[in-house]
Image: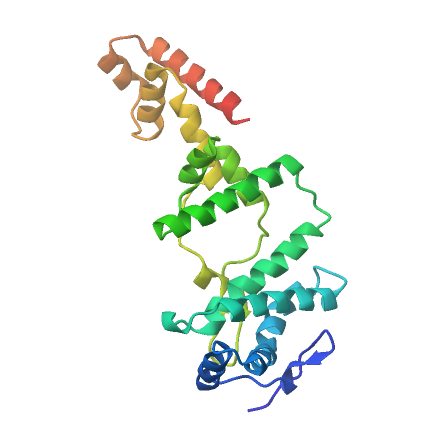
Amino acid sequence: MARHKVEICGVNTANIKVLTNEEMVQLFQKFQKGDLSAKEELINGNLKLVLSILKKYNNRTDNMDDLFQVGCIGLIKAIDNFDLSHEVKFSTYAVPMILGEVRRYLRDSSSVRIARSTKDIAYKAMKVKEELTNKNGKEPTVAQIAQELGMKEFDVNHAMESMKDTISMFEPIYNDGGDTIYLADQLEDKSDKVANDTRIALKEALSKLKEKEKYIILERYLMGRTQLELASEIGISQAQISRLEKSGLESIKKMMQ
């Protein structure tokens, strides 16, 4: 098979050795027994993984050499923390860690500035998320994080979302010639027709309405009932139903602005 030259940071990926799974296992066993030369081989044998991830960021920074070093930091962290007993491919484990370092670097040096208060909330939320994950063995919901912080769910979700880059879930982030990893492979499926932050804001707004307004709006827009049907059920005129519906919608609009 032809070996195509891909050059990033002055490194020709065609000349980089790609370790087999058996070689990786043997090197990790040696490294975890204290053999530092095995760690160096693991780093050199996985540079193609770093370079493959960096290809998609060619237009995001003027200094790919710095980004390469940042990616290597993520690779080294992955090597230091990888556990063979979990029986997970090293590339599957390492990709999120490398991406995390790269995205953190780009975020911190981005020309798009995020408010300091929003960053503070996001960092606190990420810390709580990690603590709850370690404690419960699974990732917490935004609502659980917000409760732990004593903050509104919408504010926490907004802060965490503001720290993310926008990229396609189906963009390949690594390919070693037969084992393609897509971003979607690293994400939990949380598909929804309504954006998460809008759904949270709408839920909060509805909870603050008067009970009659809330009931009318839910029945009208979720159940598809007419004003006449509701007027007959509640025992008031259609005009009153219309006024309550309009009042409720205006309140929701103000609370979501």
